[in-house]
Length: 380
Image (cartoon, rainbow, N blue to C red; front, side, top):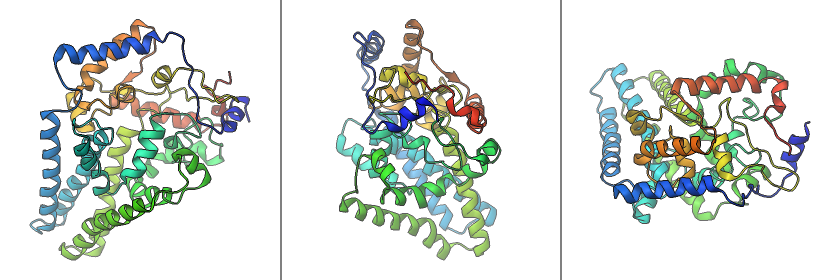
């Protein structure tokens, strides 16, 4: 095991990022973003754009569900409606639940709180999302033992240089896509339930010993609602055979999984990411802002369609630095971020969507070799 890996594994407390005496880059970036909103007179929240989008997506969800249960279509038509309904789950997560959980959708904290429960509507869980994503991932992205997002695929897929190497990881760039097909099934049926009964490692990631009793009640109540409307009612109502239902249900999850994966994974887990290390004293070698730039990539940055569909998650650097700003501003803000980074000679990673996906598979191939275990780890 490398020195860097030993240092990473031995750090038991939360990492401490380097504090520059005069972090002009971060200050300048914040000032320029504030100036943008003062100059344009826009709110940092969503305004009418997200009011329209949120209303449209929730109505689309309701209409598609009604059409699914109508039995107006043959089995292939029913599958197509079910597929669109499944994809609407992803759109709701990207565009409503995610921003609402960051209190970025509307000025009203109460309204954001209500809409953030759309996570539960589509089979996820707001409480665990706030812990694993907002609190942990956003604080320590790509830092082993502290960012659960780089460990949840292990041991079948090795994403991080600090994950133990196993012989079958050599082939992971070949079989990973097959595992990605069940990503949404894993999120709904495994991840959420497993983290409500945390192991010692996940307790460290989430920062809790056990969720409050209230959250167990919410978990099981909302899971019951989810399974009732996605499984029980369709099985009882749809005029299809049970074989057709199972094949359709799995097919919808397969395509939804690829949709989610193609947006969520390439923003951090790409070949350009350096992965943070923690020394024996618990310190990270970079400032928090520099660490974000080293471990985050933007793709399709200028695309209005990508911003609309993905809730701005494709402009991920802006999101990590300013998570409380609504995604409708991300295209404009990403230009400010890029220009400021170039001015301060900070590397800005940008790719096409396809380029980011290809870079992810390059990472998989590199992490699938023992030689890759020490790549880009800095023990200093």
